[in-house]
Length: 144
Image 1 (cartoon, rainbow, N blue to C red):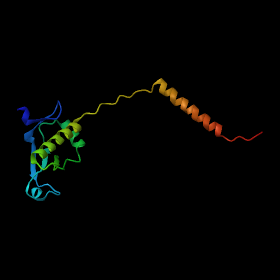
Image 2: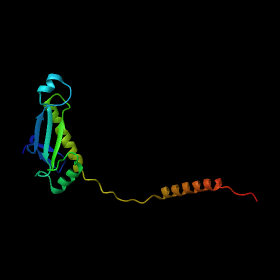
Image 3: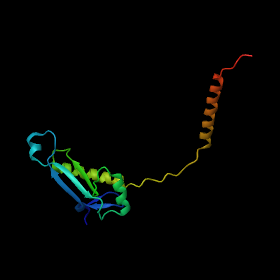
Image 4: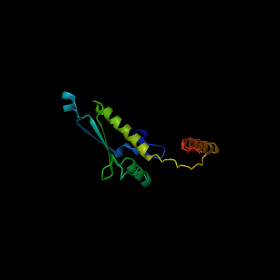
């Protein structure tokens, strides 16, 4: 498969363009005759649930990260109508797809718990002592 027929998401995932389905419809909003006669809005559909390019772990991670874009059947839907050109909208929706997938497939680093430093402990205790003394000096004492 040649490089131009594949979208590289990250070093582990590459998705063939054949797995993406583009549909062209008329854009909404102002634009007069051009918008009424041209199908410049691009809708991208990617079958996330049945894609052979993704492992089960990647599929579940992507489905969780992109749940607002995925329908009940597991298909990812994106649309673009930013430009008046069908080609520019297609490029924009494809670039957005790559970024969304890249972000959804990123594995978060595991947090390693750390202990507070000696200096931070000392600063915390010092501020507690200072606050305690302020409150102690505010107390009302009866004269003897």
